[in-house]
Figure 1 (cartoon, chains in turn yellow, orange, red):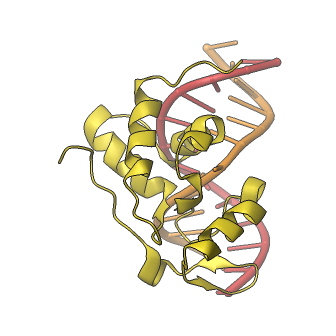
Figure 2: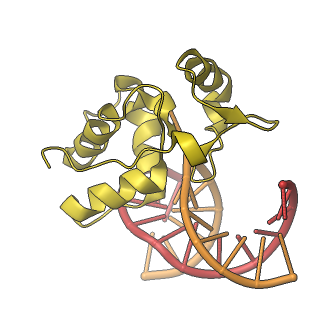
Length: 109
DNA sequence: ATAATGACAAGAA
DNA sequence: CTTCTTGCCATTA
């Protein structure tokens, strides 16, 4: 059994939930916003939260800063993004951050 | 306490 | 464009 999300994880999941359909955000982008509120965390920590509790939210809208998909779930992620008409480029497919990138905002602001 | 690891990032080559 | 090297922060051994 996995432990329930702590306060930090809750905040991360909350931010991920605000990403609009058809747009994506980087791990670092989320980390930056969460850092403004909690004062801790980093891209790696956000990645760790996603690995454990990602299934609770729209995890497929979270990619690396360069638009690369999460290798562990790349196949499913690609399918879900394609279903939302997220612009992809290259091979292996990466998200076109130029147009699909979304800047998250702290919940409540 | 140190070392290794992880759904990462940024800069150098 | 790609690959490698550092830096990052929390968890686990």
